[in-house]
Image (tube, rainbow over all chains, first blue to last red; front, side):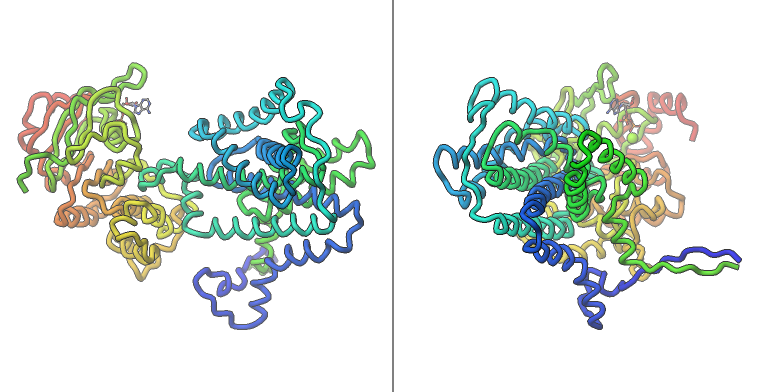
Length: 333
Length: 252
Ligand SMILES: Nc1ncnc2c1ncn2[C@@H]1O[C@H](COP(=O)(O)OP(=O)(O)O)[C@@H](O)[C@H]1O
Ligand SMILES: [Mg+2]
């Protein structure tokens, strides 16, 4: 007797966008669970972490923000290989305001978020019309150029950077702040993409000429998305620079460009939760592998390859599908 | 509707793609409410002419005026905001989205907002109404199906509905009928006649001469990018150059 796997959608009622009638509280739990997991998981675990792991989680959250920002850009057809541009600009703005003007992180971070967003958008405006790989190449090259520019002109502390920046009063507070920012970005972006505005962004990614013929200025939308993504990245940079108590050329490092892409690919693009999940796997993994010394990068690379080959759609879409569908074996005649 | 100034005036429009002259010195005028048919063998520059008028391609030289305003080389979204909508010969739906969600994008445009007095209203409802108008039967729920799963006939209708959503004054249909069965064509013709009845000016590019000649006021013939005839259907088909162009390249 042959058997075949049958998939059944669960909870169609609660999953439909328009109907909010929850008929039982099992359905309510079904609906709220996916949202509760990241909130409770992040905020609840924080006080129980050792100072070392608190630090790791802070750095993970910073990478997760860069990964979510990357995911927003890709959903409007902008391939970014230079999230480090946003990180570096954000960190230099916050660092300079703190180092030269003595502003507290309470002001440097919000200002760096907005100013970083504006500055990066203005820098990239001339290349916004480039497609796919051409835009990606410019984004890859820009942070590398800027870091050499700092070295050559010795501005902003040159190779020494800007040391002695104001730290956060307490590591746990810092962890809570970055986790709340991360959760707000995650839910904000998911809501944005579910709106009609998000539909236009998907349209641009899918078929930009069709959006143009619908009377929409696609470059206006791309500029807006770039600003939002760059602001989130700059926030990550400004935050990280106060954690490190240092702003400098490492802010433009390739790590900040490549890890977000790897996180998005491992976690599942276009979902925001996926890239975040990806960051929460890859960054701690890289910490654990530290013990292996030189072999670290080998294992890290192996892990990436295994994941990309084994689960090309990404972890999050896979888990999401399993959650929404029941599978059972049915007999075939 | 005798107007002193034409709705659309194209003068000396030329486009060359690195040596290949796709459209060569084409001029014509279009009165408000007129239905102009454009015919010509494959590769004669019909689609390029549409792209030039709608801003998707910048002309090498020449001028496009609309409502007495020079719109040459304007961005497509600005041309739409003036009231010109188009369909694509190759349908361009968002394949992963349900048909009615495809309609949200044009319904989100500044032009629709402006015409509705600053409000967008319930876009989903408007989308479903428009789709019903072009033949998405309401009870069949076909409007909720993912565009990627729809047959060509529905995709062409969706293309038309997306253009209609912009509430244009001039609508340009690039081979809307190609790839459709006779029955499907027959069911779309009344929709076009209705648009016409509403006073919308129409340009139709078609290979199906029979259907086109029945509804068009005027026919313009392109061959190798040049306009070789422009006038009432019977007159145009009598012209020597048209006979030569058509006998030379097409048999049907
Ligand atoms: N983007 C383009 N780049 C280069 N050549 C093009 C482009 N678009 C059209 N052409 C050329 O212009 C000519 C006219 O094409 P087109 O306007 O599509 O004709 P039609 O719609 O009448 O079949 C063809 O020779 C075609 O190859
Ligand atoms: Mg064509």
